[in-house]
Length: 326
Image (cartoon, rainbow, N blue to C red):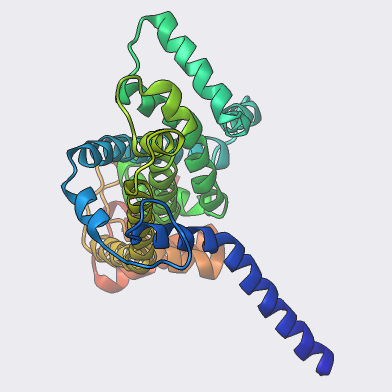
């Protein structure tokens, strides 16, 4: 018992040391942002929030934030779409070059970002494209889209394909299967991939350095100010960026599960309604089919669904009609 208590205390101390190692530099930057002096010295003699006021009214900082936000927002949306379909391609379906596709789509993750940025810059110059924030979007996607694909694929591997097959047996169209079965079940992975994509694009420096051209993102400006022309705005903007990123993560953690549950409830409500099928002429009740599938597999899915229809008095005449002999 004593050994267990000592081990527990040792793990607690180890965790505190790791957290201190990770976050003490950020605390030092936060102190520098409220220091009256131009450079950080301890102990801090005079505190001020004038640097935050100056950053809030600075047109330069506003332009930097706007450019970084545009790049991150577009990268997030496109990476979620590419990641969703890319993950389905190699995690859900079996085809001839599936493993080769998986390796190729994940390969850019292992490239050094500086080398990747230089290669993209040479490629843009070869095509006669002038680098700007738009070319930075392409550069960010080359590195971030595979990460989003990998995150969504983790969720897709745990997805039971029999649910889609059973929904098709119940008369659901391809669009209905995608929007009411596949997307809701993979939505937590898509949301996590979007969060990762936004944060990775927002703070990306190597790719932006080579591909933004005359435009400048927030990480580039911070680096330029640290190398030459240091200003107290550097720790101020850095601290504000860290705080906003933390708030975004907390909001996604708190609100994300509620959105997923609300979406599931809405999908369940729609699935109970009578949705005419264009091909089979009967009503698809996906939720009842899922219960039957859990109880007895694919055959249980069909039996549970048809029992639900008979109990509700709305079984399709096409399905309930007796078979003709011979």
